[in-house]
Length: 523
Image (cartoon, one colour):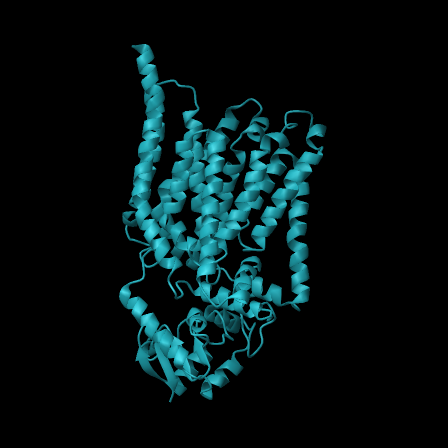
């Protein structure tokens, strides 16, 4: 009887882990439907899509999108160049399309899920736990939204996770001397040099895909400094050189334009803007954040109980993921920068799911004291899966309802009509939807109205030449997302229009059509 009970106790966690897959499997059709709809959608779904792809189109034509802003040519160029170059290569041999950029982002998301799944499997040796993590990443709404937008976020994250995986998989090799004399820990052998070089290269690729994804290299640097100080210092020097030297070279080549676009145009930060995004994010995703936070807490408490606390912490197999989660949460502060969005929280939720799976695996590997403890541990994962399965109803309001949905038929029809109208217009067109101009085959000389307005407010760009063009009626058509005459009572224009543009359009243009965009022509 005892043998039978023991056999049942061994199978029970596996059965419960299998049950934890069901809520996520039920989300797959919705996630797949959303992914397919956006991948094939012919219009812009995020402002940055048009901005990035217009700059890729200029690059494909041999025009530097990072050149200093001119009176007659303003590009936001908010991201480092690798993703832009990939899209430019596609535009050099084919016509404009959103599909390439979105496809790259989607493939990068698959890579992110695969890397995390492989890390969980390698650490826990539990295939069901690895599969759960992969499904959780691929079906979480916030991650799905950004997985099919023509943006560099997920490609940069995939590069960083590749670097994280390289060093974590070889952590035991790097820590082989951690229990020896202090002098031994300061030695770096040839194998260690190879590991940190490969890791630093992956992180540098991540930086030059999107410069704000710094959590992984910082977490790795902290872990190395804690365990092998000289190795951590060497990693920092190598990574810093791989980032700063090309950055300085690009700044010189572009006559200061690269720094202007990457740093100066996007250097603002607002606590209010951050909290407006952070509050709904935490309200919706606090269960995975809380469970994931259990891993760094467990690592810390376990080390505190050990006789040699620092040595135990260095030797803990989960040290790097335990560092990664709080560092990722810290860098989520980037959501408060000018034009920031909830894409800044994607890395945090990915790492929280990663740490949640590692925590469950860690608890399941504890001594089998009681049947109840062994059974209860994977039920945490079932509860989390149920929360993720019903996330649209979690947190009070459906925070992501506007983003996580398939475009409605009337929206598609509206965009087709407006795109046809803009395409048939013979003159230059100004629009705050840059993707519309790309679809219509119009030249884009002013990208990202938000950055343009911010640069004007901070005296980094002078909009007088653009305002004069509007006053002269040089744009045969202006397309905006709002009716400027309907907002007149609000006491000012929208935050993506400079005061000069707001006044000039109202004085010299009139509305001719209200659709998904409001269209204006000269009076």
